[in-house]
Image: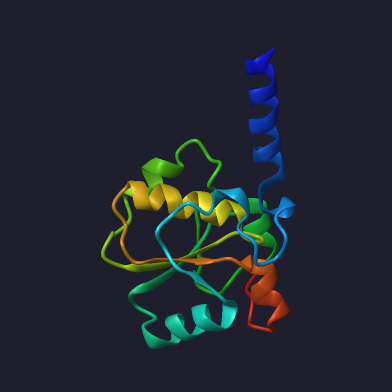
Length: 139
């Protein structure tokens, strides 16, 4: 019975994704060493060095297709090959990781920490915060 409860909880997290986290709150998955940034701070980082700062959107491909931060790279954190995709990224670059509102990006950032990434920022307000701030989006 205990295993069934655990399986249901994990499935619920996978289905809920970022939607369950209040804006700006990374939820219970914030145990990573990277700083959280606001949309304004993320935009400033992007403006400082557009070559070495990568926006990593960890939402689903459908969410990404509906709208995303211009120039963002999409890697679905719940995709089975997510870790393989991460291992192909340059660990020396700077990454701004985001999802819809903060939960999945915290999971992704924690995984990136495990893999040795050192320059990662977690956009806790997520894509919703980016849009709410009036910043440009791409489709």
